Length: 427
Ligand SMILES: *Cc1c(COP(=O)(O)O)cnc(C)c1O
Image (cartoon, rainbow, N blue to C red; front, side):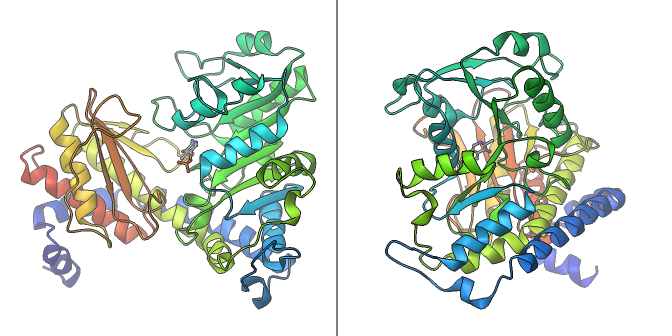
């Protein structure tokens, strides 16, 4: 037994589980190399942008009150705009989460009588209330913004004739969700997003194309703004915060549309001019600096898990060999015990709250019990190793994150250990 194996054993990983993991990892060398190459490219992109904007120590100073002339905030927005090859950016701790960033981008750019179109099917759950698909106080629907949706075809492709038919003189904004979220459709590659935007712009050049980029940042060498997206939106407690940002969201894109969002986030007339950074700037900068390699770690974890659980006969989405466009991995266990054991393993491997045992419970807003595993430095941060699963058929677990590859590996091995201990898998 080598020293590393002994360390694993000390943390509760049996020699059999360790050996199984080593065998799987051996087969992933070339995939991991490709991920490292993307991380290298994206790292250069971020460092280059920070150098171009002349980031300096003064950027990390805390501001308070109105936050006029907040150097760190303004330069960080320049850095984001540069990395996304966009005209402008809004990157703020006043944006509470990803849903808030999306709500601000939408409500800042839509007016009564306008129509919003989703050509990629149902958006992320929380967006249903923002849009008013599910009636909700303050929704876009209450402000007279209508909504249309075109579902993806059975095979996951775009339904171009239906999208063409759905575009009309009132269509003001098209929202495209990159990640599959908690659905089973494939995640969209940036290239496919570009093809969809080109199709739409050919028919209606003045429509605003917005991409919900959550979980997609730095997975590829290009971002949606490189292929025609007018706006790109995401959360800082996912990929671009690099695990360090304690809160926040971003909106990047065309100057006019980012401005419109800023007038909604703060106030008409004030826009980007106000909003103190309160001392979070170091974590925003440093997190963005780390984000390419953190995203790479999470991706390696997702691919490792797909290969482990596929080998054991479980359905995994994406599968063991597919190319990746976000960091989410789904594994279908077919029974509640599998979902529970998996989540308990992820929890047991966490740096924080590893001693607690997650159990399924009736969370508000869900139609079944849900189990969640998260032992994170930042509450609810899903760039940190985390997993959750609804206790209902098909008994699938969704997991994502991992700030470092060794930790993602430990978490997945621990999930496998719990599965083996419960007699759910035979190694
Ligand atoms: C996480 C996520 C959101 C919402 O972000 P929150 O920070 O949870 O509000 C929206 N869309 C997608 C695709 C997401 O993954």
